[in-house]
Length: 170
Image (tube, rainbow, N blue to C red; front, side):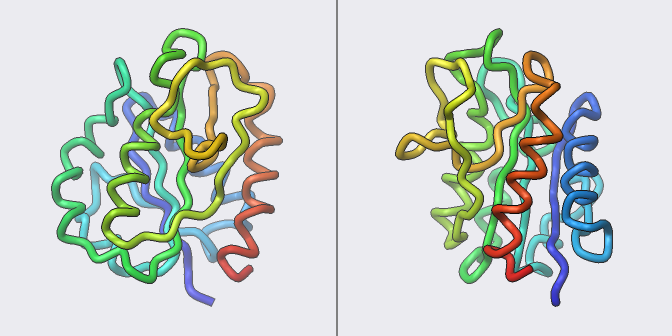
């Protein structure tokens, strides 16, 4: 079994904590290896056939700064044949018009470069008006709102990981 590479960007540490919780839900570092995109070369994405991408939506619908710095470099990575899941952190109340936009921006880019998206998540239970991460009535990945629904985070992560395991051959 090959490892899953989980690449995250974080401004305040929240997305890193979510990445660690996802890693633990999968069974630890023997299954999921964590990478802070601020500290790793984009080339590391090539080393994994299965990826999890984590990004908070920052400011008003923007990519977190480390992902923003790497965004154009993603064009140099061939994502063909890679299975990719996404998770995002955002605030559905304060930023209802762009909740989880960063996750959607990354998913759209990586899909255009050949990546296969898995792990779509229902929009039910969220109170937002618009999102670039919404496709066909679902989010492209796990939407986490630690600002307004922290009590749901652990349950959502467990359910999402259970959904992902078959997609990742686990």
